[in-house]
Image (cartoon, rainbow, N blue to C red; front, side):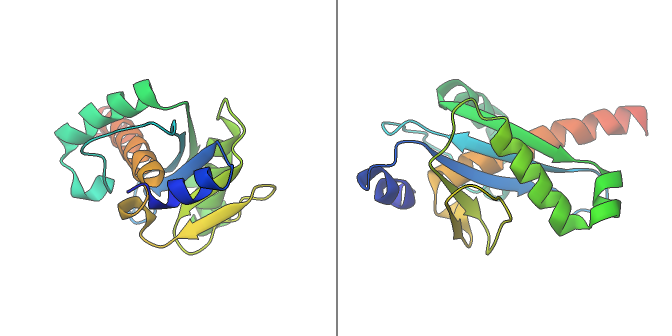
Length: 159
């Protein structure tokens, strides 16, 4: 799961941000993106594509990632923004927000998917990246857990 990271670390890049989103498919709720920068000596057993991990395990891994990552940023586009812009543009916006909230400026972005509109950063887009890159998998867990927590709160307010 570190093949992409090792490729960039060995080329001299120190800070790589994995980026993924949650909520593009569902009909309700926001789209949430996360950006995660991991240290080069990281080991995160069990981290994989968030869709392949149970909710209980995701919650545990969320804490592990938050504790061990060098930086984590989260961005969100709400339903009004999705309706106004369209889901793809709202997703890009939430990804840009997530990158903007990192405490470390990444040298390259590893983004899950075919394409992302995140200007001013070198990026590598990786199809099924959440199953191929540890940084992206970590971001997928942060995004999914964050969105799931938001949806539980919405369920309380709007039963």
